[in-house]
Length: 450
Image (tube, rainbow, N blue to C red; front, side):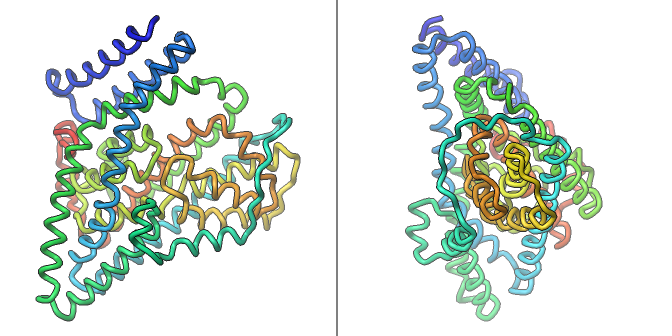
């Protein structure tokens, strides 16, 4: 088929998504699911049946839609993250409430990160990932040392918040926002009248940003269609031939983290039905799956917390941005642990008990500091391998399937943020249980669906 015909098919698929909304009035989560399926079919068709010269041109147009959507999401990050964190903190009554929320949130992040690292090791060992792998000639990689961990965490200190914002360095920006929010709530506790003008300005600006967010997120089904089409038209499923077992192991580990760890927390701590939670959380989970970016999904994540999970906005505005840069259970916990087992098996290295423990410890730090962007897991995976004394070349062996596993990693990370918001909100009395249990999810319109 020629270029015009391929592009015509893509345009027809975009038009079909519009029809699903305006004619059939399908819910937002259903439309996103359909767009994911259509994108997979179109992308694989282009990969297998399109001529290379034509396919490359089609991919450029598809990428324009997909990457354009991601760029719009990134546009929202800088105004949204600091504003939502500071506003969320100011909504707390006093510094005592701040301590309660902060301690619970960070504690949950550490707890789930520990379990993620353990799950990664157990599943990787059970599947014996990497065993019998032909290592062949591998691209050389610059080794990292334990000092890189300290350099990484040193970079989290916000010496210049403006530069951090300009360079999209999110953790320093989040740290600065938290400090500013703490200072603001301290002033509010001592002199409530003095902080009112600042509080009103912040709330007004946040409302504008939220409205802008609604406008951008209405484009989600079309962005998901284009992103899925682009990635699969580039990679196909060829990488699964040699690394299928590794992909399967990562997927199972992620599903165990979601089902057992997050589902268990929801059932036993928040005492809600995990199935209903996952159904309510599906818009954010699906966007994370297709965009492969926790930060790119942040606006949807916060909206899902408030609109569908019925979490108070001040908890959502605190947990959401913090989780997007500090709660990377799959990218920092499961994946580095799994690759460590893969490297040991592929290169015939027997791991000692102390090395297993060290993998989990490093994974915990990695989950709190992995970059919240596509491929963000790679850096801390290399650090984990080097720290434990394993060949960093193993990262090159699994690079061919990184696109596939990154989808599941990101979905797991975002699900962890959503779970944490409900558990923390429930503990603080900020979770509307009745509204959550009685809402008709097929008719609930996250701000994005209207």
